[in-house]
Image 1 (tube, rainbow, N blue to C red):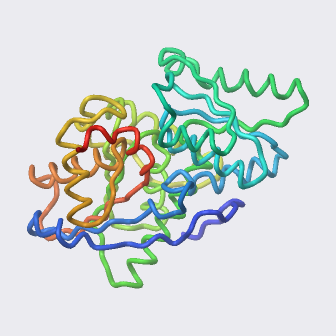
Image 2 (cartoon, rainbow, N blue to C red; image 1 turned 90 degrees about the vertical axis):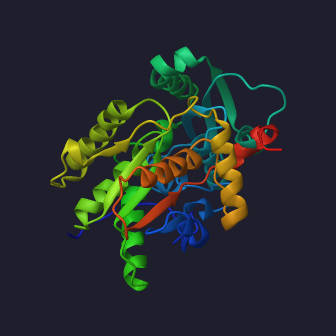
Amino acid sequence: MSFQFPASISVAHLPTPIEPLTRLSKEVEGFQLFIKRDDLTGCALSGNKIRKLEFVAADAMKNGADTLITCGGIQSNHARATAVLAAKLGLKSLLVLRGQPCGDSDGNLFLDQLVGAEINYISKEDYSTRVDEIMDELAEGLRSRGRKPYVIPEGASNALGAMGYLKAFKEIIEQAHERKLKFNAIVCAVGSGGTYAGLLIGKFLYEQDIEVYGFNVCDNEAYFVNRIWGILENFKKEYRVDLPIRRTDIRIIDGYVGEGYALNRQEEINLINQIAVQEGIILDPVYTVKAMFGLLDQIKKGRFTKNQSILFLHSGGIFGLFPKKSLFF
C-alpha cells in the first residue's frame, strides 16, 4: 500500500544499521538474533525519540513555535532529545520532569541543563494525574507573554509521532530485502507506546508477516494495549488509513517491569555487563535491558518457534547508565 508521509525534518543519522548478535545467538541455540541499532541515530539525540521528533518538530515549526514543551522522568531520554533538538533548531525548551534531582546532575538531566532547558519539577502524584494539564498551563502562561509554545506529549507518542516508527519499519524491510534476511519477529521496549504503535502500523500497511512484540517497562499489559489502541485509532482517523488491526494484534509481554520503572534488579545489571562484554553493545537500564531480559527469558520458556530470526530494536538510552554507575562495580 502506498502512503504519503507528512512533512518532517532530517536530523537523525539514518538508516541505522542492522547487526547480527553472533555470540548471543549461540547461547539461544536454534535462533538467529539481530539488533537494529537505533542507539546510533546521533549522539545527544541518540535513540528512538528523535525519529518521532522529526515529524513532531516539523509540525511545531510549521505552526511558528518558539518553545517546545514536553515531559518525562528525571532521566527521560525523550525530554533530553527534545531539549537538544530545540537548541539545534534555535528554539527554547521547557521540560516538566517527574520527581526531584538527587545530588549532582548526571546523565540526561545534565544534558538538559547543558543545552539550556528550563526545567519544572513536579511530584510523582501530579505527574500521574495531571501532567498534561500542567504542560497546558505552562503553555498558556507563555502565550500570555507573547511566546508561541508547542506541547509534545510524553514520548512524542501520538499519531504524528508514530510516523517515526512507521518509517523505521519501512527502513527495516528495505534493509532486510537488500541483505536477503527474513525476520519472523521484531521486539522492542514499550514505555509510552508510540514506537510500538508505529511498528505495528508498518506491519499492516506494508503487509508483512512479521510479529511485533513489546515488553512494557512500566504499568501493565492492559494499560499499554489501551494506550496503543488509542494511538492506532487516532492514526487511522487523522490520516484516513483503513488498517485491519484488532486489539488482539497488540502483543505486549508483561512481567518484566521488575522493581519498577527505571529501577533495576541485579540480574538486569548483570545482563547489561554481559552484552557489553559479549557483543560490544551497551544496553540502557530503563528500557532495552528489560526488553532483552524478557526476550531471552521468553525464548527459554518456548514462546518463540525454533529457527526463527528475531530483530531486537535498540532504542538507545545510554545516558541513563551514568547515574547508576555504583550498581556495576
